[in-house]
Image (cartoon, rainbow, N blue to C red):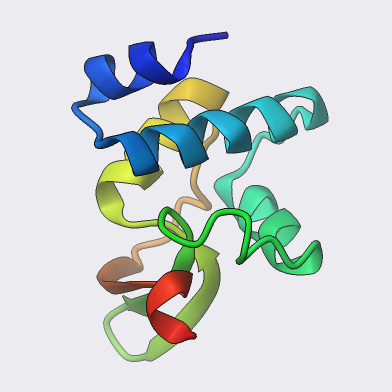
Length: 107
């Protein structure tokens, strides 16, 4: 497992993001998720918005016909890192993230 400092340096993260990301990875790596949606569901089901308020939140999604909010999501840069570090795959849909609002801004 990488340290907070190693994550920060490798992915050019500030201390807050690196610390939350490190804690999240340590918490969930043993759960062996394979899909990013499972991680988001874990965050919402366990009410972890206060534990990871800066790196997780609500992602506004869009496909060719609909727009919706996705709870427990991540900003694009953190999403990429989470998937890389945990070996997660997306759902394979054509939906795209439009905006991200961290939980810290929703309080």
